[in-house]
Image 1 (tube, rainbow, N blue to C red):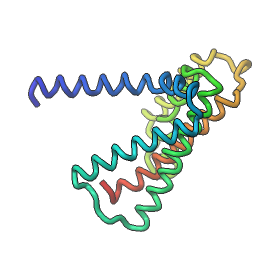
Image 2: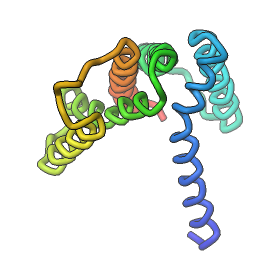
Image 3: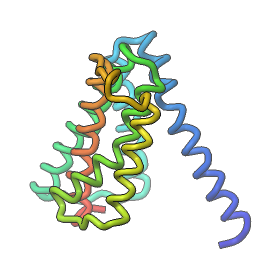
Amino acid sequence: MTKNQLTFTYLSILMATVIWGLNMVLLKVLVTELPPATMTAFRIMTAGITTLIIIVSLKSYRKMTKSEWRYILIGTLFGVVLHHLFIAKGLVLINASNASLILALLPITTAIMGVMFLGEQMTKFRLVGFILALIGVFFIQGGTFSNMVFSKGELYLFIAMFVQAMSFIFVRKLTFTLD
């Protein structure tokens, strides 16, 4: 890899991280101007059209099996429709920083579900990572259980995080046979 390619790669990663980090803030602004369901429908439609253009331009399509369709439909329901709808509904009720904190639990939740449903190994390294992540969230939340009360908006964000983790499990099963 040349120096220019490496620089481009790192800048791309940096931009993706910045855009990802702004996601909750921008969504919070959008849900103050649009109803959550409308905003979610436009986001999903835009992503779907973009994905379709990429698939057609790369000629990366083929006939899928019934099993693949089932995983795609379940993954779409959980990871696209429900996930984005619950994020939008939650952001109407809570601030973007709390939403980001709740969604930061997604990798932990996904890894735990991978151990439970995909037979992935629970290593000492993973266990230490889970514990450190939970301790970090605990301290950011306030460092005490006495004031830990969940609002309706936070509950929506927890549901959004959980259904996204579920969709990742179905997508992972799909990747065994589909590009």
